[in-house]
Length: 209
Picture: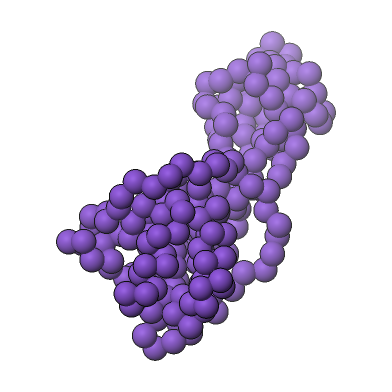
């Protein structure tokens, strides 16, 4: 599909990751269409301005009384586990940087409100016409946002030297032999009694040299 877009004025940028608020999320209910003529569309924005575009559009919908045609606005994100300074935290990262989902009834008026929102560069579509997502695509995206367990952010490589910062092997230096991203575990070869011994640790238990 082609992007139907023009340049807009620059906006203040946003951070790449935001700490999760842990709010409950129901993909099935969020994906449900609130009107038989409503469809989900994708709008293109400047990368880094997705949340600001969402806020701007929601304000325009309210001030221009378009709530009967524009219903929901989403920035697709997924949760990841990030380890920083030995502490694990869950952060939200954008699944599709530069894109925002809008549930709306496509009319000339609703198109105008969305298209002229500051930061919006166009609708995603073919031949200059906005193309709606099918329901299965929307549910898959929302499920990725709300149900899948957090994915650890991998900041290590096999063969890299690291130092153990906590636990029985605190202070030992070893080489990464294996990384289990799903479990958030790392296997490190440490030298003990003249030979290398594999030790399984959490990501938060090691630090780069």
